[in-house]
Amino acid sequence: MFLRNHARDSIDANAASGFDSVAMQKQLLSLILLCGALGAAAAERLANPAKSTALFGDNVQFRGSLDNARAKFERQQQGTVAFIGGSITEMEGYRPLVCSLLQKRFPETKFKFVAAGISSTCSTTGAFRLDRDVLSQGPVDLFFVEFAVNDDQDARHTRAECIRGLEGILRHARLQNPVMDIVVTFFVNPEMLKTLQAGQAPLTIEAHTAVAQHYAVSTINLAKEVADEITAGQLTWQKFGGTHPAPFGNAIAAKMIDELFVRARWDQPLPAEAKPAAHALPAAPLDPLSYAAGRFVDPKLAHSKQGWTLEIPDWKKLPGSKRSRFTELPMLCATTPGAEATLDFTGTAVGAFIVAGPDAGILEASVDGGPFRAVDLFHGYSKGLHYPRTVMFGTELPPGQHTLTLRLAAATKSAGHAARIMQFTVN
Image (tube, rainbow, N blue to C red):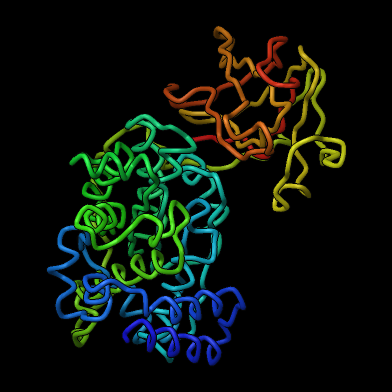
């Protein structure tokens, strides 16, 4: 009954507010149809907010404060809410449900919702694109972050890489806007589910939790909630919907986020004396080399010695599927072994945000005249797709000015030698 009424109310609120995407309404209508299939425990969880704290337990972790965003939404009746992540954030899933939830809580508020999900991208890419895709949109009041799944199955990150990426996002965001409230949500894939059911935390969730604790950022452990319910026989992986959750699964995520708002005392009157307060920023990061100063650097700033051109690839002639968001972008391209280019930069890390398709080659990278190191651009998902990913050429450089030299290797593990750079990544 809660979901049925919530879905109908959300559609009405969205129509009134102008947030009325067809996909969003289809998502909510699907929830209405699914209400009849709710198991007893799941129905109680979604329908009875008074009992949800005990039911969700530690899978909802409220840390710090969410008062800054609430005060902005309630008192000024305006606010900006941003979402960054991979395909789980880009899809019409939990994100539009949370937008609807917020509009329902604050019906008089004019919201700006920033959708910065890009399929296949990990927290490393997120740290470098944060400024372009989120912070440049104006002051963000409430920021949702989701990268646990892609750090696992796409990037295959080590623990250190997970920390450098997520800490880069959180620390950069708080340095730019100290009053920004942040929530990190952990979704789940089949391998992560197996790990959780074995009583262990997946590497990406453990690493991201460590970062969230360091910055007193709230977390939604949807992954463990799903594992707990499946183990207890209260949910199935099929009903949840898989790595890219079905409406049923996304509704659980949204309800857990709503429970976080309850624990943040959003259902109680806001104290009259409440004022925007800067979140405490730890003096020392978990990793001094995390990407908290990450940014994109335009590839047109590179210098081609031979074989590189700045152009929009002729995608019609290239095998493999393409994603439309990338097909109109000029890229720094090379396809001939021996092609060489340099980039001058200032920072402690350098890499590139690329598309790597069936013809992706191997780049040899040297910093400041040092030995060349081979970096294979080809990815497991590149066989049939021009796949977006970030590759790093140097990550522990001394602060200061450096020169990166790239050359295309004669060796390859794919059908070609191509390198297509959308942006350089510099910390």
